[in-house]
Length: 434
Ligand SMILES: NC(=O)c1ccc[n+]([C@@H]2O[C@H](COP(=O)([O-])OP(=O)(O)OC[C@H]3O[C@@H](n4cnc5c(N)ncnc54)[C@H](OP(=O)(O)O)[C@@H]3O)[C@@H](O)[C@H]2O)c1
Image (tube, rainbow, N blue to C red):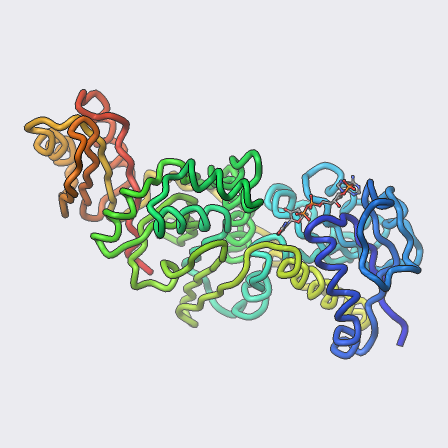
C-alpha cells in the first residue's frame, strides 16, 4: 500500500518523541492502518545538529518550515515548535496548501483555535490537537467522540504536572514552596522562569481548550479566573489533612443556571475523592455528564513519549481520513462551530471556604474575624489551631459554610485593616461536589 507522508516541524521534546515512535513502532502503525506512515521531511532551525532516530536517512532535512509545507509529496504537517507566531503561520500555510495539521500547541489553540478551525473548514482540511492538553491522556478523543453523546455539566482537571509535583512534595515532605521549586528546577521538571506553571497560566490555556470541547463555547484564557500556587505552604496541608482534605491546583468548568463558571485555583479536595489521589507530575480529568454520570481519566501530562503517542495517534487518524477521502472531519472542538462565551465573574462561585490567617497573637482575634464574617452573613464552620512556637506569626484556619465568593471577598475587605494580620488571609474554595 502507498504510504501517507508526514512532515515533522520541531524536533524538541515532542518532535523527537513522535519520531521515535514513528520509526520504532512503524510496523504496528502500518498493521493498524493497513498502510504505512512515512516521515518524508523533518525540520528545525538547527536540523544539522539534531539527533534523529535510525530510519530517517531518506527524509528531507531542512531548517526552513516552508519547504515542508510546500513539499508536493507531504500529506500531513505536524507543527511541534510551540509559540503563537511561526506556529500559526505554519498552520495557515498548510491549510492554504490543502494539508491537514497535527499540533501539540496549547497556547496557540487556546488563543486562536476557533479561528484556525474556521480556516480549516474552508480549506477542507483537519486540525488535530490531542497532544495540546494532558499529553498522555486521550481526553480530546473522549470529549470529541467517546462521550460526545452526553451533555457535560462539570469538568475538573489537574492539568499542570509541575504544580502537582510541587504540591505533592510540599504535602509529603513538609518542604516549603521555594525549596521544592528550586529542586524541581534543578531536576529539569520546572522551567527557569516558572511563572507559566506556578501562576496557573499553562493550566488555564489547557482549561480553555478542554472547556471549549466540553461546552462548545469560544473560550480564551483571559476568560478564566486564575490563581497560582505560590502561597500554599506546608501548614496548609496540615490543616487540610485535619479536615480530611488535600490541596491541588484545580481547573474547574461548571455549568450553572447563569452559565459556565471557569476557574484555575488551588482548592481543597476531600481526600476520599479520586482527584485527590493524583500525585506527582501526573494529570487527570474528571467529567460529569447528564446521562453518563462520572468518568475519570488519568495519565502522564507531558514528556516526549506520552505526548509523542498523542501526536502519532492524531497522525494515524488524519491519515485514515485522507486515505478514505472523508470530506467531513470531526471538529477538534467537538462542536461544528463554537458559540460565544459570556464570561461569568468568579464572584458567583458558591462553595465552602478555607480561610488561613497568620497573626500576631493577642486576645480578641477570633471575635474580630468572626464579626467581619458575620457582617457578610457568612457562617463559621470550624476553627483550627495547631500549637505553634511563634506567637508573632501564628497560623490558624477558619472554615466557613457554603457562601458566595463575593461574600468572602467582602469579608476579606473588612479584615484588610486589622493590624494583627501578618499577611492578607488566604482563601481557598473547598470543592464539595465531586
Ligand atoms: N514538552 C512536553 O511534554 C509537551 C507536552 C504537551 C504539549 N507540548 C507542546 O508541544 C510543543 C513543542 O514543545 P517541546 O517541549 O517539544 O518544545 P521544544 O523542546 O522547545 O522544541 C521545539 C522545537 O522546535 C524547533 N523550532 C523552534 N522554532 C522553529 C522554527 N521557527 N522553525 C523550525 N523549527 C523551530 C526547535 O529547534 P531549533 O531551535 O533547532 O529550531 C525545537 O526542535 C509546544 O507547543 C508545547 O506547548 C509539549
